[in-house]
Amino acid sequence: MEKAIPKLLEIIEQKEIRVVSDAFNSTPEFITYFQTAAAGAVPLILLDIAQSIKRIGASLDGIKDELAISNIAKVQGWADDGFGTYVHRFVQNEMAPVEGRAMGESHFFYVWNPDTDWYPDFERRQREDTLGPNFGGYHHDLAAICVRMRADRQALLESPEDNGNAVFHLIIPTYYPIVIDTPIAFAAELFPLTITGSRHRGTDIVWFNLDEDSGFSSPQLDFIGSLPEYKNKVSTGATATFLGCWLACAASGIAAAAFPPCAPAAGAVIASCGTAGVASTFVGAAADEYEYNRRGRKEVQVLGDVIFLN
Image (cartoon, rainbow, N blue to C red; front, side, top):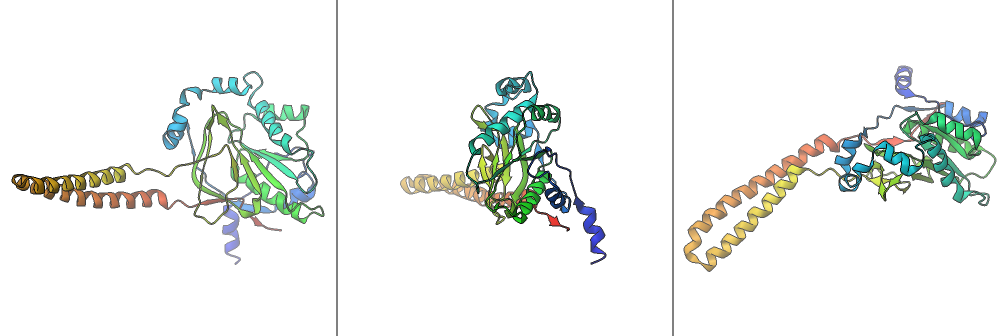
């Protein structure tokens, strides 16, 4: 056990989440829970715009010419004031529907965006017009913000108030496609959890690769796309070849039965197509096995999975 502890501490990564001064989780009790929560580093693959369009396909390809920052800034209304002002407004809009609800229906809000250059404008707007105590913080690291939510929920459960049904909201404002290619799942302790992404011209521009076979529940997703499975072009071509060959065999057999003089030629066609059909079956199986080995063994990253060291 003593030998294992140093190695465990090597893989543990603690991060500091930006929390506003009047937030519900800014008190020492909440800070202590977060400081004593540790999690291993979570590697997430974020695709760039070109990779995102290729990975997702037609839905993003249809708006690729509109994804220039200047165009998105104009549409979202932050061209003159900075993206951080849009983030602030986005959070306000998400918080508005639940303001004034009865006790026992507490909602807490967090923001994730992979960049940090929007922080100054956001913080300036926050000083001018505070988001209130139910805003839990923001960060550029998705795994870190999930650790914060996990620690905050644990602290809420330990508090004297009835916070057992508190709903967490993770908001992802963006002006470019955010596509997580890594298979992910969310720890059960984060639930109930609602994740809200962004849209442009009716198209989702935030996409997750949620692993549905991991046994973990899926959060409520609003304006979040689900990545399609990779299509193996070799396997698809082999399947088409297989079907084509056997259709040719069937047609040749019918022709030979209907016109006996054609039987020798039809026999040659059947032999040739039959061989190609069998070969395509093996090619397709080999391609599927290769694709499974290359992609299917990616480890699912569980966000919000932590160790409490206190």
